Image (cartoon, rainbow, N blue to C red; front, top):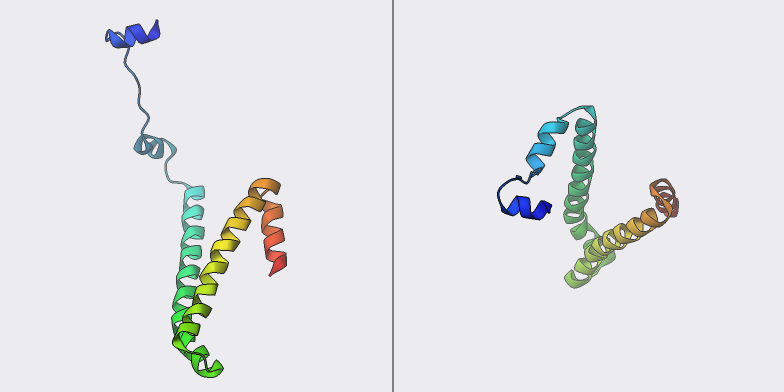
Length: 108
């Protein structure tokens, strides 16, 4: 019956957009903290990638490896990031964030 009224133009459907939700919630202390933590994490990732570009030639000279082997060493870092992110997500979803973070940090 409700569908008939909507088709006849008797009832209007309401839409709640992302912009409406953000306007309703506002920007408070929690949003500022989330933004700050995300910015620190993003900066740390960028610094790690930049560090790899500086360390790579030094490792190549010190260890006496070829350019392909240097690329492999650099790629292993990114493979570790992917594996750690996937395992961290599965562990945190299964056992909780606190246990997952503790378990991952204790393996380091």
